[in-house]
Length: 341
Image 1 (cartoon, one colour):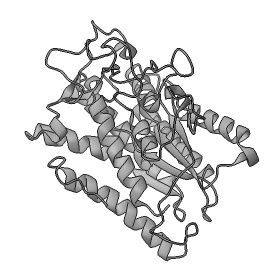
Image 2 (cartoon, one colour; image 1 turned 45 degrees about the vertical axis):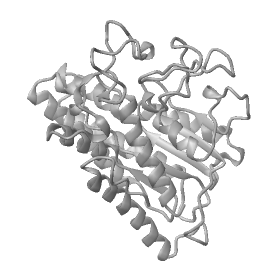
Image 3 (cartoon, helix red, strand yellow; image 1 turned 30 degrees about the horizontal axis):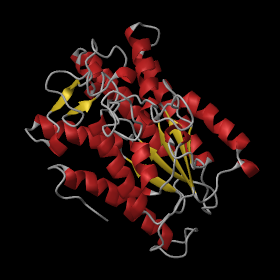
Image 4 (cartoon, one colour; image 1 turned 180 degrees about the vertical axis):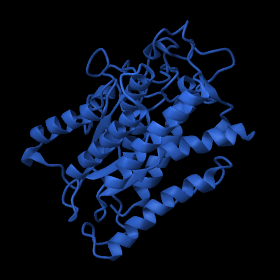
């Protein structure tokens, strides 16, 4: 696989995480996992289905072939025509970068008007319960009511659940103990959804599932007291850990993307004086909240002084910048093209 050793100083740790996931899949294969007969065969999905929250969400354009679909990150312009028209092909989300690897097309960004091969089922503000509902709907609408081995399914959700339960503790609606128990339950529920879409014989879908970054490391989290930051970190870690524990490892149907560790590595690197991929700011949002009251209106013309889409990790107080999507997207492509799906 490509270790991309020139990317940034913490790359060894990030690459080792992808390597461990790959090695685990190879070991499972050698022990009799089903699926493809050759580990050298390239996985070529014919369909992609995206579940999650706004970190994976591309909104539809004004017409079926329009390019003005917006995202919950830094929106880019069509620079070949004008510096004022949003272009959904610019500043691609991590799931767009993954779809590009397999030439799959979302209906939400389809200027060529071709038959869409990627489904956007993520929702703004999405929580685990919303993913359950979205999967219910997907299974009900899928021929045979099940995914197939040529489906690439992505799943990243949990940040909005963590924020909800954090607020419940802060407002005394829940005790910390009760909030931790609930976030662990939701992590287990998310794992159950991953398990619904795969099986031991590898005759269902291929799922790439991800942890979520520690909310304590976001601009929102950094603005809170040390005690609140500890709570946000606890809720994030318990959610991620409970989800990972309950995912049923089976054959070659799964790919694990540790976005939480990736973002922690980036933050640590910058705090230590590094500039991973040119990032110099991991504390502040790059979208100016006065110029862009909502993140959907964040463009190259509404950034903070000295800010670029590449030198800040966060777009707003919670969501990834384009630079963040590059990290996740590159890891996702590395993982997808390394595993013997």
